[in-house]
Length: 391
Ligand code: NDP
Image (cartoon, rainbow, N blue to C red; front, side, top):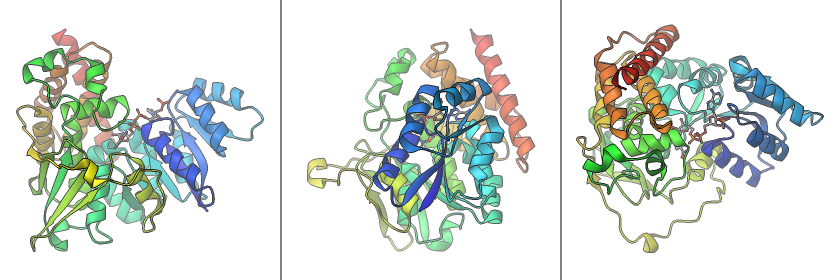
């Protein structure tokens, strides 16, 4: 029986994970669930999955949940200390890192430092602190399992033990990251400035939380994934090709020196990569329909146009500048997406805000957490000021 902590339990990835767990009660059991402030959803999940601990991000939400759960035996914790405690608890085997954004960094690192199997959905933590993160994985013997469908696909196309090892040493020539092109792929570029949050969140193939849905519309998601792949598979951004693939069936590919190209295919449902990361090297039922290639019939690939999607170029630039520049990119993006979702800036302002923040920031080394967190805070302040000045 494996005991799990699920960080971001109330979200899209958290719920997909719990769906798989419920299919295998003899193999997996929930030790802790954690969320931000969604007390109602957390209450439902606790009643259904009986965790020993539940964690909310603030005291008021934790008190409300504790009152509602009274007498069930589930202990409710609050804040960063509570998250770190359930991520690193000795009893826990596997931690699912599915908090959205930079808030996921510290608890995910706590799980890494406790040497857990870490199912990484929270790509932002690797983008912000990749060098330090991967060093901590090595030092503490954590088992890092990519959950992002593209990175899980690449993981499945590489030999065992490939995480953190130079892909070139494994005969890899390049990595091909696929992306659907998001909800705006067929919309005229001239229309982008009028795109609403509802349009940007209406992804044609995937059902995801609002932040990653907007990232998919701007294709910053692919930029973040490019950086994530650089850290996970020890490659340079120049070794990664981004292709648009509107069917979302081929989740990514690895091209080898001998001319072989290995791809992973499946229906677009996050339960496949989550189940893979959870059970590896075994394979378990995920509840996902088997792929019917006759029904799919056609697989299209085109180059991603970086004029249409400037966020990809901004991510490439952040990787090339290195150090804290990736934390700056991530923080500016989080603020811009939040303001777009609130309706206070337009769709095109997301990329231009990030661009301005990056141009006005002198990035430094990212050797320790303090440098990274300070760069994150400064970039958030600057992004807020840029948006304020423009309005
Ligand atoms: P959602 O918005 O659906 O869920 C986010 C989760 O994080 C919720 O449980 C939320 O709690 C919790 N959360 C937010 N802020 C905090 C905080 N400060 N402290 C504790 N918990 C917090 O996001 P997704 O599930 O879509 O995405 C989660 C992560 O997985 C992201 O990093 C995303 O990029 C990545 N990912 C997602 C994919 C998908 O298909 N959804 C695919 C690949 C990667 P609450 O409900 O209380 O707000």
